[in-house]
Amino acid sequence: QVQLVESGGGLVQPGGSLTLSCAASGIRFSIYAMGWYRQAPGKQRELVAIISSNSRTDYATSVKDRFTISRDNAKNLVYLQMNSLKPEDTAVYYCNAGLTTGARGPYWGPGTQVTVSS
Image 1: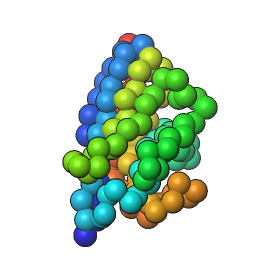
Image 2: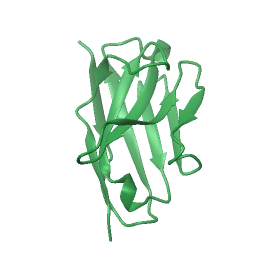
Image 3: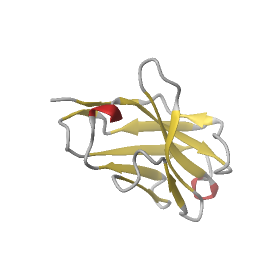
Image 4: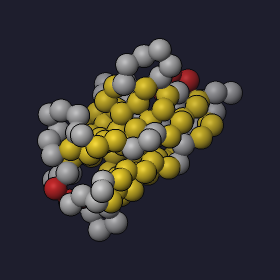
């Protein structure tokens, strides 16, 4: 049974930082591409960042140079370090696992809320 569980969301002021974590179980983590997606109210879910099985990364233009995705294969964890947060980063953030970086994978976590507000 595949399970992805996000943590680390919360309320932060503009300009602040947060680190999200996603713990994966039930998959051979090291061979999976791991992605972070987000969905704001009234908007479609969008890719934020993705890391391949060999740690190649890609980012949405809106978060490049502010967010960093990383993975720890020994602990089955993927992280999203978010700096210089803006109100428009407010969304539910979801962890995703798949065997390719070319499309959304089949496995999703329940999401964690990130709210950027003063």
